[in-house]
Image 1 (cartoon, helix red, strand yellow):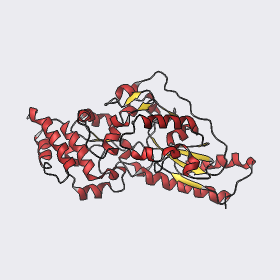
Image 2 (image 1 turned 180 degrees about the vertical axis):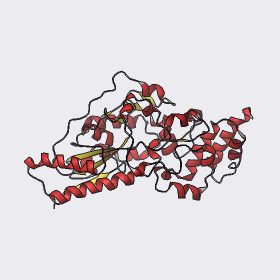
Image 3 (image 1 turned 120 degrees about the horizontal axis):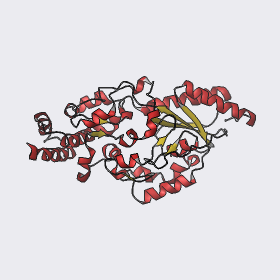
Image 4 (image 1 turned 90 degrees about the vertical axis):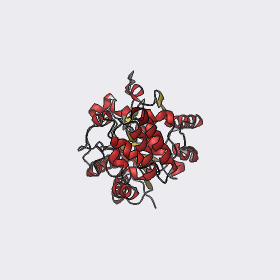
Length: 357
């Protein structure tokens, strides 16, 4: 049975929740209602345009994504949190991107799987609230259910959705994860974030594939993060050269964002670099067999793409790398790979080197 504190106590409870969130390692905690009508209209229009690509799950859940009470009945408020993730101990991004023999992985994925880290902290926050007020309805989410997390975070005052469609905070940039605690508690809500992008278009100009087709509008089918993480099959040939050495995700739109000059490195040990992935060579990673991939990346967000797509992505990177005996030998070694998907990308990569041999 859930209990609701008197209205006079809800303000104090909201303040305590935010303090507990900070104690648990969240950089910011905000509270919002569940009204997302305008965001729902934008989502449905985006889906109708087919810009979600092969992410069928985006369409499968329908309006449940924009109606929190449909996803978790009884929801009256959403407690939204953010946690910085930029690894403090890794090589900076620019030198890696500038060296076509190196493998670039999105900086959020260099450490432990964020889903596990944030969900565990959110659960602790929920339990801390329960110890204070008694039983109540709640459910924690971290990129693990159909939730419009950026819209909820904006409404909770954690920032605004930038022209690259990522959430930006004027004091912390955009290098952070989001999580949500859906709750039945009628807590006081925070003031939504205001847009501060102004006339800036740095992210639009920096996108390697032109995936930001207009301010605040992303075509996932062109996005390198989609192509290297979400797409199951072959990467379209006309986009392969544009991917460069980005083998898992892409950070270009965030790297050029002027608000990220305010970003802070994470203090979380879970987000520290593992397996030298901040500065690994394409040839080295392409040499991992299935067992080494599993051993090294289990517990990482990267693990879910599987070894086959890992090799597919690396083959594209090697096709874009300088022609060297090491690169060609690495590709030759996988010409007979059991996967037809890998073989096709290896053949394409080798073809990029033939004129230069």
